[in-house]
Image (cartoon, rainbow, N blue to C red; front, side, top):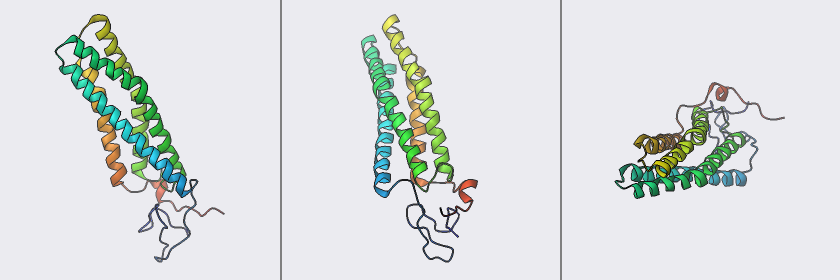
Length: 194
C-alpha cells in the first residue's frame, strides 16, 4: 500500500510515513527537487510582484481620487496605465503558469487539496478580471481624464485594485496555512507507478 494525503502524518514535502509508521518509497513527481525549487522561486516572486503592482495601482488610484487638481489626477491615472499595460498581465500570467507547473509537477496536485483547488480558481478568476475588467477600467479613466478633463469616478480607479488586493492576500494566507484538508480525489489511495 502506498501512503497518500489521508495517511496520518503525510507530508508531500518529505517521505510519507507508511501504515505502520515506517517509511515507504517517496512518491514520484514530474519535477526534480532542483526544478521544483526553481519554479517555486519564480512563483513566489511573480506572486509578490502581482501584489506589489496592485499596491502601486491602489496608491495611484488613491492619489487620482484624492487629487484636487486636474494635472495631479491625470498624472496618477497615466501612471496607473503604465502599471496596467506593462506589468499587470505579465506577472498575472507568470503567477498562473508557475502555479500550474507546481501543482501538476508536485505531490500537492491540482485537485488533491482544497486550498490548491481554491487558489487555482481564484487565480484564474483574477487573471480574467485583470484582463477583462481592471485594464479596460484604467484605460477608460485615462481616456476620460485626457479627453474631457473630468475627474475619474472613485469606483473606477479604486474598486479594481481593492478587490484584486483582497483576493491576493486571501490566496497568500491559504498558501501559508494550507487549510481544509484533501479533496475527495486527494483522499483516494494513489497507486505506485509500475
